[in-house]
Length: 100
Image (cartoon, rainbow, N blue to C red; front, side, top):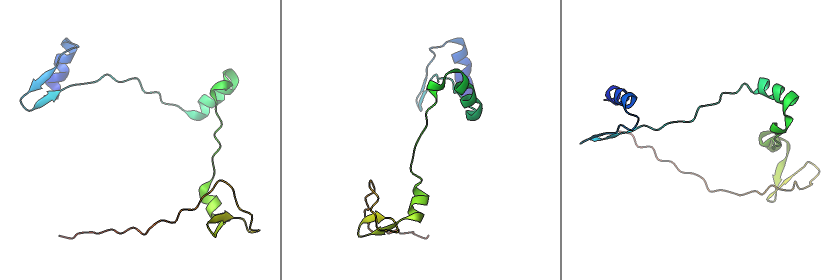
C-alpha cells in the first residue's frame, strides 16, 4: 500500500488515499542540518562570532559530592549556606510487579 501511495504521489502532489481501514497521508519535512560543532565554531570564531553562545551551568553531580545538607540547607564545610538551592524531602516510591 505504501509503494502504491508513493507512486501516486509522484504523479500527483495532492494525491490522498482513503480506504475503509483508514487514510494514508504524508507531510513534507524541513531539511535537517547536521553539525560538526568543532569545525563550525572554529569557522564562526573567524567570521561571525556573534552566533556563538557560551552556556554556564552548575555541575550538579560535583556540587552534591562537595557540599552537604544541614537543616534543610546546602552548606560548605565551614557552615556557609549556598544560595539558590532549596531542599525538598520526597516520599518513598512504591512499585508493584505482577508475575504471571
